[in-house]
Length: 503
Image (cartoon, rainbow, N blue to C red; front, side):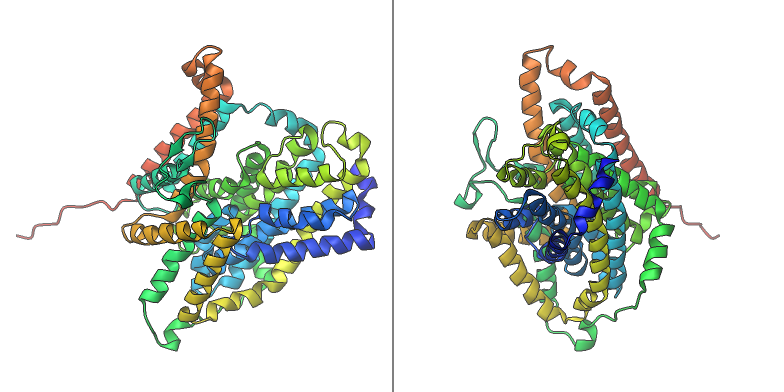
């Protein structure tokens, strides 16, 4: 119980002040479209140069935690995910905001984030040695099948048709191939200079979700003020707490899914919310309500997003292997202060390691408190007239896309993808499967090529990818996921009964 010995260090004036600054700043940065958790942590690293190692990590860790949760604000109110991790939150959260239940949606998201986040940090505290060895069990073949499993989730994600969902995912997989091949260096589908570096995921995310919404708002033209304004329903925090407790199944599925996905190096936490949303939908007796403003969808997605934060640091702190892009930036923060993570980190620098981990535990609670406080105020965004909202969203979309790499090329890509998505949505296609394919494409491709290289030096491709207990287990889940999605669609189709003939 060494972590208890260093627990009081979090509450020294300087450390606790940095924790508050990181938490509040992270919520603001997370709610800003285009500023992902990775970018937020990277922007704060220069401010840690003059701080002690533990103090710098407290600031970065608080920003990491609260930025993931803060992304739900723009996802719910503007339908612009603050980060890829918040994609699933838009599916039910924005629908609730359109119904005047934005405050309720935000309260549910912050409460679920706190529960999932605390559980994830407790895993980091108590099970670090065991989980680090388990994470090493995943090789290229397993990561490939894990990416394919994510693609099969596409079939039932925010789409009434499995076929259209899979087609959307295939479009995303194709978009992921644009640019230079990371392994062979081959040039693919670069028909404009803006595509030389491939499609940036943040620019794509903003374009696919924000631009169709902006076009729809402008297409409605000038409407009366009464039609523009949404009546906001009052919702108490106690009611939100009861709702989260009553939805314990979604909370459990989200927390467990996020913890598992966060632990696996290289997968990235951005798919945790999507996988948790899909699994919660499949296990829910009210699956038909998902996508219509159902609280289970928000709870599962946000619990998973923050539950993955703690486990994603397990490989980093014990094996020097970042479990996510943000963890890789945190690694840089450690190295700046001359601290090398590894098996002896907790022996050589226990004060730094345990103070940092304890601060993340307290940071989850502070994030929830501040998030609940601002929820009712932030929900008033829904009362802004659509004409004004469209202009604001368009401005944020351009700013967010340009700020990623300071490139107008990303703005052009964002606009082109947004216009394409507007027409696709009119034919029943969805943005969420497309984005998921764009995220998982590089993971699947890189691990398939690496697996082939390893297989060429061993027993061959088929034995490498289709043998072994973990491979077979993942393949079985892939097949089951496809079968279940198809079965659910067939079950929900209306049965055409022959009309009765009256004599």
